[in-house]
Image (cartoon, rainbow, N blue to C red; front, top):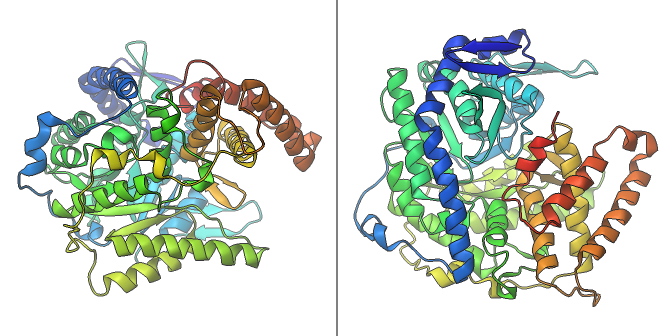
Length: 534
């Protein structure tokens, strides 16, 4: 199909339901977002690269002196709408009908409908996700499994929908304007907002968003300008849009106050996107020397000093500005066969959520409906009759730049088992991602692009820093390729030759070598991965 609407082209197959989404008026709105704000997006991406190089060269970072007045003056964000006042449990997942129905029915207060890390941007996924979201907003979403099992939305309260568009770095090559791909975030945000904002308002809710991969208050300012223009375009009140920003990059951790300030008419809170934050720590200081090398991924827990500093600062910043602080992901997927695995994992989930609730977080994330009751129970205990913990100010928190960057305080070492796990998880995830599935259960954990990023960036850093493992071997390209051979052979033996022949594991290996072993570091693995998607 090749539709032209105000010089915007849709290149790719579109079925009857997709035509409900890709209407001339909706595409014209997306085109206007691209024209007005696309150039600024490009400029901010260039600024990201320059700032990263500066931080790595200096091997440090600090709070911005030019925005000190924002941090020291008194202001607050706008009061939350009624359906975002209580966010004690949030469940995440892609807008795939079955997962969406289970999430909306789960008892969680919020469903993060993820168009980013948990959603491969295959064109069919981009369009079908918008169809599913429109159906979910109107409470008409249904699904029937191949076995004939029906899935329906419940009659009572459903989770509030909060959509996460793609980050600023991703383009959409199937929507073309002036012979160039449009910004993926404008496609995701624009189509959802255009079709659903008024419907949501009529139903007592509103267009709510999570903003991913933000690195500065200037990037938040751009989103704020997009929100203002979009509300004026549909003639709805400014402030109807609400946004929660994921603090999942090192630069953003130094600009939490400024990010909230820029979005203050539209801000709802900040989220501790801890897996992407670890990836950002590795990426930002990947070539800054051995002082910034982390141990095995599994050893870096939320009790590490740098992670405690990051989460304490997030809670205190949010509550000072009357914004919500949302905790990180519990990624465990319960086993239907191994009760002992569940027992150990549930204990870790409880410990994690107890820590967050005790620290003053207003809610937290889970990846599976079976974890909703655990998270709910713990936050119920701490919140009591209160809908949130905005009254927990955390005035005791005084976090320095050095504490945010204290990698030396993370216990653990670099091991061969850790290296193998990085290779194995990355291969399995990338094969699934290339096949169209961005949220993948691997070894009883829900893996998404963020955890795959940790795996491949850690391998890159270990190779380029000549890290010595617990076995005495130095991490080299040759060692990683040998482990790749062994892990591929193990996967082939596990799934069988026939399944392997129809899989994307060979492509996954090629991609992994490109993003983990090349001299040049790819800022995001999803960019070269997108080039491999049919």
